Amino acid sequence: MYQPTISLPDEFTGRRALVTGGSRGMGAAIAQRLLDGGAAVVTSARSASDTTPKSSRFVAGDLRTEAGAREMVEQAVRTLGGLDILVHAAGASRVFMGGPATIPDDEWQDSLDINFLSAVRTVGAALPALRESGAGAAIVTITTGVAKAPQAPVLHYAAAKAALATYSRGMAKVLAPAGIRINNLTPGPVDTPGGIEVLQTIADAMGAPLADLAKNVPLGRFGDARDIAEAAAFLVSARSQWITGADIDINGGQ
Image 1 (cartoon, one colour):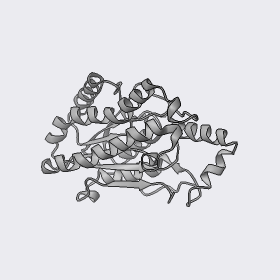
Image 2 (cartoon, rainbow, N blue to C red):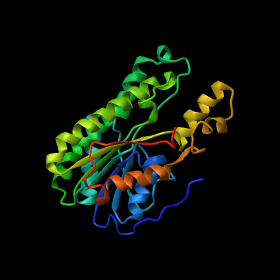
Image 3 (cartoon, helix red, strand yellow):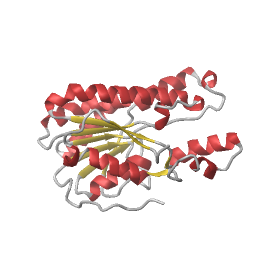
């Protein structure tokens, strides 16, 4: 069971954050954690949901195109009056239990667009505002454990997210002279709507209850979205001011 941590209520006061994929799951939890720390937050996704943090300001955007990403970022920066923090949590995956041979070509392209190129587009569009930040700008990208331990039914997703991790590590050196830090988080199986849907599909194909998959996690449970949010909050805070180019596993020891 997730145990709440102690939030620092003024840790992010005066800071302006954009969280993509912020309408639900890990993105929504990250946005709420930043709000709890005093940040002004814009959340973005194709549409809001009932789990989108109410205190955030929502900007709709489709990151599958360069124009969509640019328009979303520009609107977010106008809404916030600048940008100090970018958390890219957007991502999606569909499961193909027949393996790579059954994954259509357009599914590979769509996975690259939403799980990798969306980050390239969003970071690129946000850089002018981040360079102007006087608060020590920080970026966090979210990948997945299967990027390091690929599984055949989601190989397209794993490959795209592996590219994202490589991109983040490379950009860390590019952006360091400007004082902009970028780090990557690699979650294991997390109890979010999208995560559970994928896990349930795999469990059903195995003829096993979902709870059996959780037994593979040494700490005995799936992650909570707030576990990821705490790590993201640390990486965009002044507490991590000498950390950039890191790729941190958050997986219960799996």
